[in-house]
Image (cartoon, rainbow, N blue to C red; front, side, top):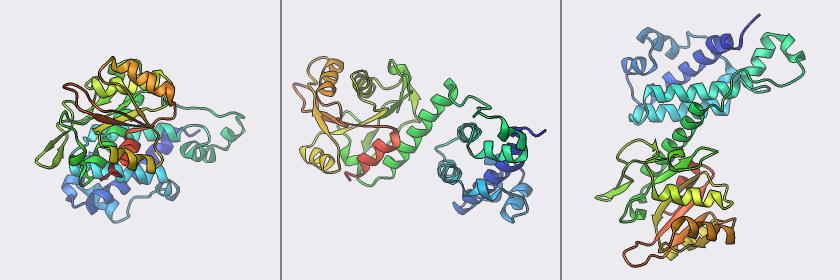
Length: 299
């Protein structure tokens, strides 16, 4: 008898720790700093560095694992991700890989061949509980924000009222189900400044636009706002985006809803302003990283 948790402890965690320790060392962190971030001893870091810990080549070669290690290494080294956030992201991946037919489930079946005869897929853990769903949204937002912060010229796209990047849970109903940047993103002397990490319930305006679009047929799960400029809209259209105008002077939710119903495929919504209202464009997408990539393509 061998539990899937034993596969995680004996093969997955040593492999991920080894990869992450190497990633952090490559980013200039000392052995002591790496040990503190990973919650292990310096001697353990040394063993990982010298290949003295057995790792699983199939786990190490999995694209999802290497992508996560790179993302965690970047976030931890830059200081915009905590060890707890990194831990939750690793937990999320573990649960996903434990699903029937996925990597850890396959390794488990190979260790316990009788499982292959079970005759149906099974899920050892539920990866869709509220905590993990929320953390996936926050993780996507942190990734999107890193894209924007590192995009040279993004500050020039920020409107006077500030920008925000938001993302929602799959069953979002109100602004409390939408995460964004507290206080918005502002242009401070030519540099985009993100005042704090993403949280739920902190965006009113961009969240309202996203929720209204979803209620009227859009499948977008994230949105970001930038300054309005016909040239920028033309650029987005050339890149395959569909644009739709709405009226900011009335009820925003109703106006956005009407625009989406008229053009359900719209991925960019815009309004040209009014008395005391700044013209702004909103880019929609399936996740925060996709929205950030679309915005980055404009700079």
